[in-house]
Length: 448
Image (tube, rainbow, N blue to C red; front, side, top):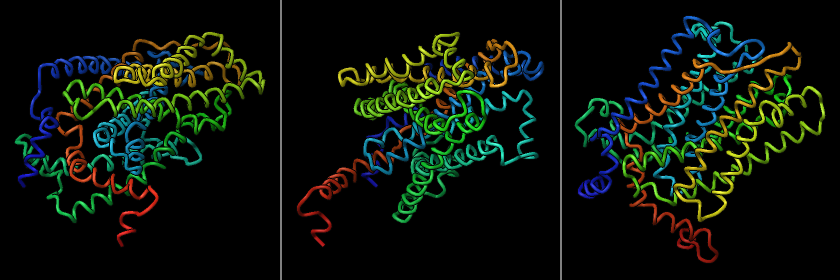
């Protein structure tokens, strides 16, 4: 009991965001709330007047909203997938970052789905998915896979939260009723710990294929059509790679903000940013490979309807978007992350901001140019987002950041019990594990 008390005092800084709220938080929350309010007004205007207040028309029925949908679903790979892989790989440096990653997944999925509802124009039309659902349509596959992913990710976020909620129940006076309810009677017995470890391990295995399937299915919404530059077999893995790419970038940005705001320099160390920076570098190269393969096959095929979009992207009206995307997703991150000297906290954050913007541009250039130049020509088409779409998009980002910040005021954003476990057990476990890798007498087998 005494050692637990000492350990909690050692990690008191992790409880401080819940116990104390400074003026800076209220100011930031007010700004984010004001932007969200502006977006709510814009959506109300769209709801009353219809989609005519947007730049959407025939044949460009998808624009910024669907771009946001694909982007946010991609960002969701920041949490569950990365966290699950690190847990299964028993990467000890994961302990301080998994919670912040898993929260991103659960929250951002709502914004992905929300943009679909906004794109419908009339939100009541969503009920047709239930009334007239048809599993021959990839759109229903999307609904099913995202619902499954949201459910699995929520469970995967909640399970490792239980011991920390019990700590809050026993040490924090505010919201004690909530913590008592959510802690599910956790007392930290050996039997409870064993069941928790099994539950987390099972969910970690389950969520990986679910996460991969989600973005694959999102790509099917495009690839299952015969529209030029959409109807390609590479879209499944291409979307998954892009999702993990943007997810890691979002995680690095979130970690940097948390570290700065809550003074968690002792928990989120340069080594965490360095390791994630290396992962981001790998994904940068993979993204380049898939992008190059996609464009090369389109060019070599020489199909006129495909080449029309190809040249519109590379040399036409979408060239500024494409080359900005290429610079932000490959040139700048590669230059920063390839050198250990520049793979610092600041360097990885700059690279991540570039990747986040670049990946949004990538989604935009996938969605819009093809719709403007469909396989069956419909005359001259154009799409220019209006202020309504821009404000709603800005509001989505602001509201997401606000919800993320509010989460940190209710639950520890760094897992206290996992940090404690790392101090108490991980060093010995890692030493034991390394011994099993080495030739000669193997601990455990040798002693048996």
